[in-house]
Each structure stands twice: as structure tokens, then as C-alpha cells.
Image (tube, rainbow over all chains, first blue to last red; front, side, top):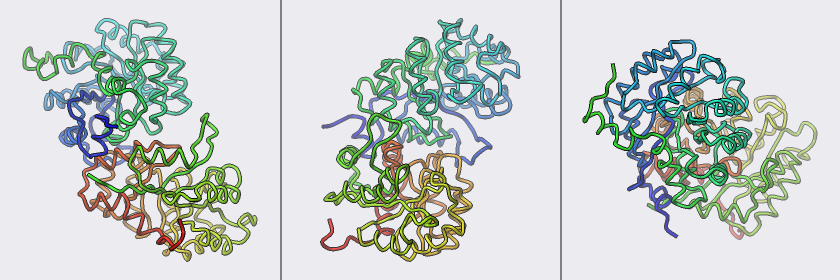
Length: 282
Length: 250
């Protein structure tokens, strides 16, 4: 039986006529481990190899050290590849959150906010993030949050509390809890709070867990992400392609669900917005 | 393009954290859906229950399935669990076992230790490769064993995405260590290692049933390797490490 997605992989050919949006990508080097050639041009080459249309990225520099310098690097990458990259503004609760959010207010390519409470050693439920929830409520931008079931900074209970307190804010659970225990907990809290979306990148997700997420929540609540150029682009995408799900559901996970979250920027395409109205970035 | 895939890293048996495990029939169905021709297979009973029972259960479960090649779990015979190291290895060879697999952390020993010296020497003399998940040991231990037992071919499995600095060091100082693809997940890690150390050091492996074959299959099929390198990683590197099939054995 032919299958548009699986046949492409097994033929070694890129996905064609499919809109794939990577909801969890990064930009730049990361000192904790060696990454061969994380350059943006190389990322685009690999996206072409697989048929990934767009990647929404956050800067490693931004969450590892310097939000301002890192977010500027993201903006430069978006300028270099306006049709291929979108960005998350990374905020650090120990640095100036509000000014960083306002600096990119109106930037057509910066389509969401990225939080990494674990790296910043600051709890997701802490008061410094109130500015993020206000921003996300006002702009309708999604907030991608690193989640892990065994963390005291960004576990699924903390995510549920934020989802409960801010029902209009769309929360993307990065890594969907990150482990078998975390996946089950993530499905549980996302079932309870409709403003939680599960993003599937990481070392431990499988086709089977993606099937469980889609069965429990619907494909519109499950988002493909790669974590590249940390984890290679070609790992988690295969878990969606080969999942025992209807083609329609796999297409939603691969890109349709994220695209709906990113309105209006991705509907028009950042490149078109850029050319039409300027980026508004200062 | 047609590509023969030979999986170095699969196991069958029930899983404690899933409602169902994977038996040989299901493994074959899974292999078919991913275009995997053959697999080196161990039995999960050998890991958390009983090594000898699991190893023999494996032979019974895959009997008559020529696509599934048996891999026995080993450990040092300090408590007499193998019934003698030499006898155990001879028994394995007689049974058609094509590889061994060690779980040092789970089984509570150190690979690079005096406890394992006889065992690893016997495995090297037997000419069969040793598979080890990298959650079960460390790169310094892999290197120490590789140097001490130069005849032994070691396949480091599930290496993760944060280990290239250590992998590159060990591959540069040894010639009997290979890496499987089940979780060789650093961005461009496969191509980088192939360019730097040769595609001959890389072996297709899925990590079934703990890992998903979608990972390694997609990674390899969409790789940027040339056709010869691709074929080597997909199957011929592993075939070179395994003994030839004996006539009359399925």
C-alpha cells in the first residue's frame, strides 16, 4: 500500500507537497556538546533534504547566556532566510523580560516566546514570568516551554497550574514531558487543559507515544518538533511519518497544527510579510 | 533506491512498562514495514530475569526464522552463572549465535575490570562482536576493553546526541570499535563521523523495542552519505563482523 510520507523516506526522497513546520528548532552552537556545522545554511540544506518547509527557532546563546544578544542572532537568521525560519523570543527571568518582549513586538518573524526554566533555574510558576503570560494573552503568540517530568522548575504539574491560571494563553509543552513518565503526564494535563499543546522532540519519543497523544488529544494538539541542530533533524520526523495514524493526522502533526497556532505570520509566510511591510524590528 | 538494512540492535520479549512486548512474529512484521531485511536479536528475559533461560528462550523463539540472527547476553562468570566461560562461548557458537551483548550497569559489574578479562578474551577468540548500550558503560571503559582485547569487535549502541567528543576520541585511538545508529542523534553526527573516521565504523541498528525503528531508518535513508557508504552502514559493515552462515542452518 502506498503512503505519501513513508514511501518518500524509504525512497530516500524529500517529502513533497507537504507543509512541514518544525515547532522546536535552535540556532547556533552549544558548549555542553559538540555540534558539527550548526550554521543556518546547513540547517536549510537539511530541511531541503527532508522536505521541511519552515523551522521555528530559538537561539542557544539566548537561553544559555544572553537573551538580548541571542535574540538578535535569531532576528538575523530570520532576515537571512525569511521563508524558512521563524523565531521564538527567548526570555530569561533573571534578565529584562519586558524590554526583550517589547523589542520584538510587531516583528513578523518572531512568532512566539521560548522559556527554559530548567536552564535558568527558575520555576515556571514564578512571578517573573507574569509579563510573558500578559504578552501571550495580548498577542495570541504561543509560548514554548521546556518540560520534563523530573524537573523542579518545569514539570507537568507546574505547566497545568499555568494553563489553569491563564486559559487564553497557548502553551506548547516542549518535549511533551521528555520521558515515558513525562509523556503520560503530559497527555493527562493536556487532556485537562485545552490550551496545552504537546511538542514531540527529544531522545525518547516513539511512534507509539505519538499515536497515544493523537488518540487522546486529537492531531491538532500535537506538534512536530526536531530540536535540531541539537538532535539531528532526521530523528523525530520519522516518528511522525511512520506512526500508525491516518495520513490526515500525520500531516496535522507535521505542520498543520503548528501553522494554525502561528497565525497570522506563517499563513502569509514571513518572507511575504517582510517584503510587504518591513519587519518592524528595532 | 533499494537498500538492504541489517539491524544490529534488536531484542524480543515482554516489556515491564508497556502492555505488550514484541515477539518474533511482531518483530518480523515491524521489520517488513520499515524495509529491514535481517536483525541480530537478543531476548529481554536475559536482561532482567535470567540470562541462561533468556538465551535459550531466544533460540526457541526465533527457530526457523532465518532473518533473525541470535545474540546472547553475557556477563562475567564470577558466580558461575555461565557454567564456565569457555564452555558458554562454545555452546553459543554451536547454537549459531552471531553476537554477544553485555549490560554491565544493569547486571552490576564493570566492563573494564579483572572480573571481565577472561570473558572478553574468550569472546574475542570466538570471533563474535560484543554489543553494549552506552547507558550501560562509559567511553573510557569501552576504550580500555578495546585496547586490552584487540581481537574483540565492540559495537557501542544508543550513544546519544551529546557524546561526539568522546566518540571521536575513542574511534581515533582504536580500530575495533563501531557505533550503531539507534541513537546516534547529534546533528549531522552520522556524516561527520563517516567523513572523519570512515563509514566502516558505523552500523545500522534500531534499538527495538525500547527505541523506535523510525529513528534509525529515517536517519539513514535521508542521510547525506554516498551510495557506497550508505550500503556499508546499512548492512555490509555488520556482515563483515558476523560469522558466515553455516550450511544447513536456517
